[in-house]
Length: 229
Length: 402
Image (cartoon, rainbow over all chains, first blue to last red; front, side, top):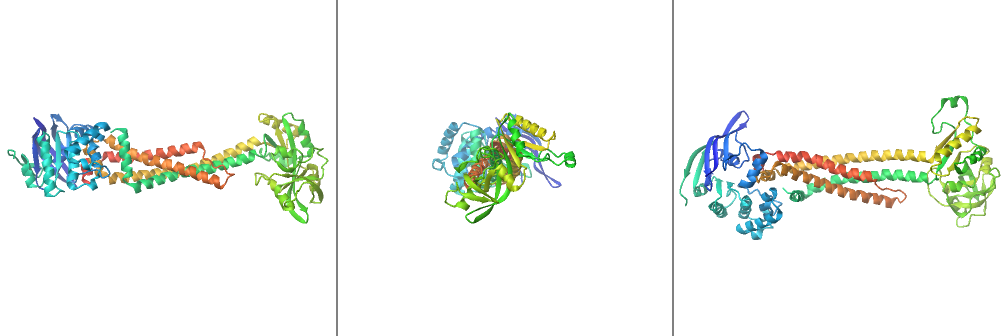
C-alpha cells in the first residue's frame, strides 16, 4: 500500500530575480514500511523534499497523498495535527529543548497533543527503558553525550507512534561508532513496521537502506532498490 | 496543550532566562510599587488635611466679615458700601437661632507676654468659655475661661503648652500672674499640646476673654464667629438662620460670609482626591513603560527561541498552542511583577507611616486594584504581538536557526 504518493511536485524559491527550482516535476511513491535513503549533493533538493514530506513546507504545485489523503490542501492546523499523529522527525543537531530533562523532551509531543500526564509518564517510562535511557531521565541535554541526545530525539520522534519517521542527517554530528548505534536503532524501528526516510551524504549509510534515491537539481536522478542485507 | 502544561511550559521558559526575566519583573514591580506608594502619599495627604480640618470642631459653621470672602464677589458691594464689622453683639444675637447649639466669637491679634523677666511675641485669641470645647481643645492644667457676661472680660488667660514651658519651665503655671501687652492676667489653664495644625498653632496661643482682647487691640470687630450646629443634619438650617439674623442686624444687607466645615472639607477632599488621581496617572505611565518592556523582552524571547518554536511546530503544535505559551509567559512576567510591586509598595507605604506617624499613608483600594489590573492588562496586551509573531514563524526557516 502506498504511504506516500507525490505527483508533479514543484517547489520554486525566489532568490532576487532568479527563480530556483528546488523540486521540479517530482513523482514519487513510497510504500508502507519502506526504508529509503535520499542522497545527493548540497542544493539537489533533498532537504526541500524532506520538508515537504514532513508538511513543514508546501509545494507550489502538485499533490501529496499521505495514507491516501491529499494533505496539500489541509489548513496549517490540520497539517500540524497530521505531523503530531503520523510523522516523527529526527534532526542532525538533535533539536532538544535545553531547559527540559530527557524525560520531558521525550514527552513533549504528547504534552503538545494534550495527552494526560499519567499516560505520558507511563509511555515515557517505557520509551526510556526501550532506548536504554533509564538512568538519564532527569538529565538535561547538556549533561548527555551526543549518542544519548540522538537517542532521546528518536524516542521523542516515536513516542506518538507515527507511521513515518523523517531523519535529516541523523548521524551528521556523531562519530562513526555512535552513528552506527543510532542507525541500528532506526533500522530496528523500521523492522517493526515504521516507514523510515533518511536524508544523508554518507554513502555507507545510504547503502544500508533497501532503496536509494539520488537527487540532482530537483529531480530524481536514480531510484534503485536492492534486496535487504 | 492542557492549561497546566501550558503554564508549566511558560514557567520553565521564563526560568530558563533568569536575568531577562528578573529585569522585566523588576520593571513591572517598580511600576506597580510607584502607583501604590504615590497614591498612598496622595491619599495620605488628603486624609491628613481632612483629618486636621475635621479636628477643628464638629458641625461647625464659620462666620466671616465681608461678602466677598468665599461666596463670590459682588461688584456693587465694592462700590457702594464697605462691609460692616462683626461685633460681639452680632455673636450674642446668634444664640437665638434654634439650630445652633453653642457659639464663640473670636478676635485675634498679636501681643507680647512676659513673666519673670522673660518676654516673647504671642498670638492672642479673644473668645468665650465655649471656644475651647467648640474647637475640641483640651486642657492639661486648670480650667478654661470663666462662664460670664461676654462684655465683662475677667483678667484671666489660658496659655499654650509651649508658652508654659518657656515661661514657667517645671513650675506650675496656674495661678501665676503674667503680663500680656499692658494687662496683668492670671493664668487659669494650660492647653494640651497638639502640635502644628491647620489654622493656628495652639502651643503658642494665649486665650483671653473676648472683651479683654478687644480692649487690648482697641477694636470692637471680630475675626470670626464659630457656630456649632445641633447636629450634622442641622448644618444647612444653622447656616440659613445665622445668615438671616445677621442680615437683619445689618439692615437687610448680606455682608457676611457663612461657610460650613462640611463645604470646606468637601472642597479639600475633592482637591486632594484630584491630586491623588493625577499622581496615579503619572505612576500609570511607568506601568505602560513596564508593559512595553515586557513586550520587548518577549520579542527577544521569540528571536532567541526561534529554533525551539520551529521544533514545536515540527512536533505538531498548532499556532494556537504556541500563541498561548508565549502569552502565558508574558502574563506570568507581569503577574509576578505586579505581586512583587504590590508588596514593595505596601512595604514602602508602611515605611512612610513608620517615619511619619501623623501621616496616614495608606494606598486607596481603587489605586491598588487599578494598578494591579493595569499591570496585568498591559502585560497581556503587549504579550499578544510577540506571541502572534512566534505563531506565524515559518517552521522550515525557524528550524534552521538553532
